[in-house]
Image (cartoon, rainbow, N blue to C red; front, top):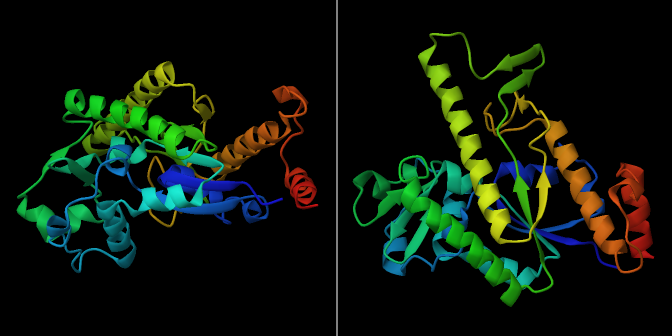
Length: 296
């Protein structure tokens, strides 16, 4: 039998569960397909940006190749089409880009207001022809847009991908990071205004995530991977920099173990109902045995 097919709408808080640095054997078990990288749900479900506008948003020398490619896909909504064609068994998504980045609106369309691409363009610097919305500064306007986007995501999945299971990654930022010499807090001593402000904003954003999860799960019955009650460190040597959302390996090991358990339980539910206590702990050997059974 083929491997379970996975697609992702989100960011590194989900994507990095499926890289060999964090989970070396994931390719033996899952077929990882399209990735709507750093794309917010509001943008993902919006119409494509009109060609005349999209052509004017030139990446320029400040945007690297990866950022330019990500922005072009977001403008044209290529990710949505590719996910529809791929027909994943599971579509994982997170709210990072909506909470952290917000959107830039062009009439009826929008793109993610991504600091790694769109915000580095001359088009953004000129500030003409679009408006920006961010959860921190315009939550009363942005929150209904995001809640509506989740509603439309569920409707889209049911209509276009009826055999796909949506899985929401519920996470909270870490308050400390780990280096080779020990643990360090993101907040420093009292009076360090920059670090104190960072920590206050971190707590505020964690509260926003919590409120959003409550709102979404009150309206929709979704599967979740939720490790908010556990404490995880950020990676002090993360290749994209040290930040409260760049988690260390234990976060992603637990994420994949929880996801493995979900997939295993779903796979077996046709013949037996298993409680969490009855499901074998998800180790590399358990994954391999399951993979062998599906392949035979």
